[in-house]
Length: 449
Image (cartoon, rainbow, N blue to C red; front, top):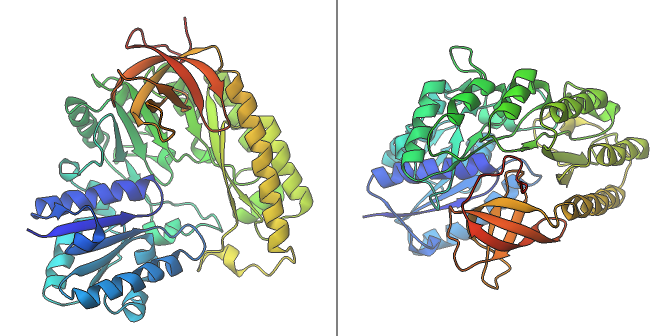
């Protein structure tokens, strides 16, 4: 039997794509290797979001080339968004690669393997619309319960000037609601208690019969055994009142929303072609809080986008104060090849100055997060246990229904348990508490009483 090893870079969708690749290989008789040196098939499942993503892949391929010199029988495949972005260039720069497979062609992995075994190079970077129909029964799901990813929509129809995703993952295609719910029911029957619906723009979900994400959430909320439902990533333009109402009314939908803003400046948002203004974003935050008063928010922010002035950056800092995000994922702008923003002329702002802006933003956001997390001290929360905490000391870790990471010492809790925890300490990125007991009434707001 052949052994495979998959190295995964990037977002939740890439992680889930690797689960699909693993499931296909398992169905073909492969077994999973614990190290790449032990594998007969090596897959690099790549991400193209950050700058120099392709160079990182080629650097890794250089090391794998030396491995293949000593073991010429091994097969090497490049999958994911860099595969889609670079295409045939991969073969020219790394002749030892056997096949290239884009993220919308995962169902064709057996065909590419067949060609590779016959020592014929193969490539499939077509944006197959039917890719969203990947047979979910075949997926090999990482660590197992309690958490599972489900792709409900692939691709993106937006035209953000900085983003490579429409080029690498194609246009939107949504699964039928009934197919998603069959997968949710199967997961519940196999011990999964939390599901997370995935899509590049997940709240753009619209199945062939016109049903929206709100309809999907309502159907999933009724599945016996499912305790929590998440969805990511959302676009502000698709935060409809119907979706907000569903979030407010459904007890299993988590009280956290990832809603990327990217900038607090209207001028920058216009150059990004985000389709909303600062006021439009804040209006959606206000509406969400009117429906779900205890909702927590995470977001993405790009610092140093071409043409960003000090005044533009100041407006982004002011947005932090106004919204009080619970988590911010912030990055320096990375030009992606083939995107409109990559063609912008040099704005004369040094990389050092842009890095200083990023540091200022991250320092202030850390203070905001500590202030927000301290408000949880003395409260009792319900934590879905995910495993052993990195900080050791006999601690386990999990998340509340608001998405906060909670670490606490407990010799009783296992992965998948719902534990009651009294919060005693707060840091910028996590809470720490005292274990009370397992189970008990599920707190609607994650609070005592």
